[in-house]
Image (tube, rainbow, N blue to C red; front, side, top):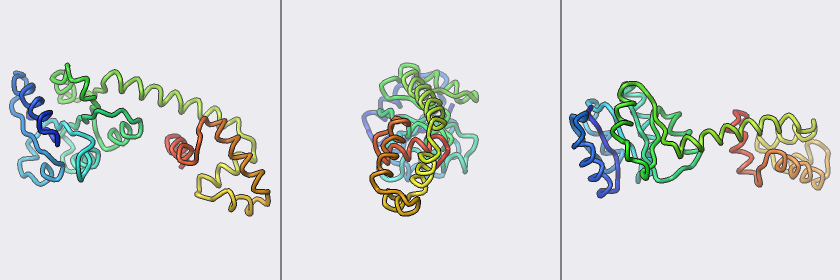
Length: 208
């Protein structure tokens, strides 16, 4: 396997290089400190598996993964991160990543590379648990959507299109107090506490 690493932490990059170079399955290891540097490297096309730090200065690892997926569809992308944000996990998977590994869980990194180079996919246990819980929350949210009253669904539709409570009040000929009470009930039923969380929940459900 020919491995490429994009990691702006020089010490961590060296640790990865040394660990991978000692594995008999690995033919070569090359590293870059930024996504832009890797993207401009003419040797990029020879990489079999790319280990990409998600939180890079400039172009992010997720953005780089999307570019690599388009130009080098045969290259496997594994995301490396110290964070566990649900949104970032799904952004990475949508960008074509076949692996999502926490930097604190690299004991089996060589096995991870073997699996993805053979066409498999790997998510470390901690991240897999978060993904499972994410879908469980979504299923519960779908059930709760069905419990909304017709008026609540009408107001939710307006909220999802970007209307403010005042605009909804004027549109539906309701007092602003009544609209805010409906919004409060919607938040409670969907287990969100603000407009931003509501928007993310609807996006996760494919409704925004």
